[in-house]
Length: 127
Image 1 (tube, rainbow, N blue to C red):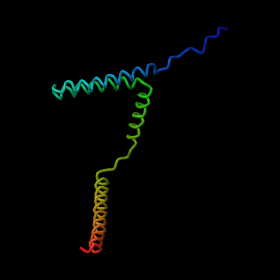
Image 2 (image 1 turned 60 degrees about the horizontal axis):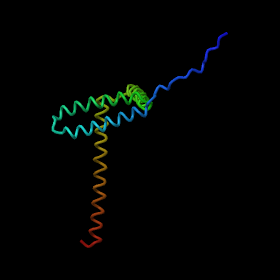
Image 3 (image 1 turned 135 degrees about the horizontal axis):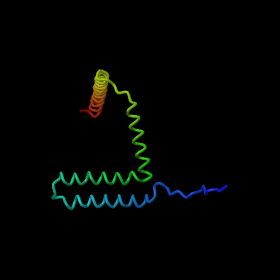
């Protein structure tokens, strides 16, 4: 019976993470510097180049271990958002009015207490 070597060396899936992070930081610094250097160029062009740069940086970052963790978190968060039961319009209006009423009531109470304190301090100071 021929035994195969079961302990094959597997390369970690996230090799060169340090290099990838360095590339991202260098590209980010160059992008910021270029934005300042080309400040006379139209804002729309600089914005378009910035968006492309951010997309490229995101693609590089998602190839790292921490990027995969972040991507997994985003996927899980999106799934959780789909499970949320959002209130209908009537519930939203009712809750909003309740909050506004409580804010108004609290404001009036605090205004009254403040007025009493001002009156008392004015009486004590002899005004």
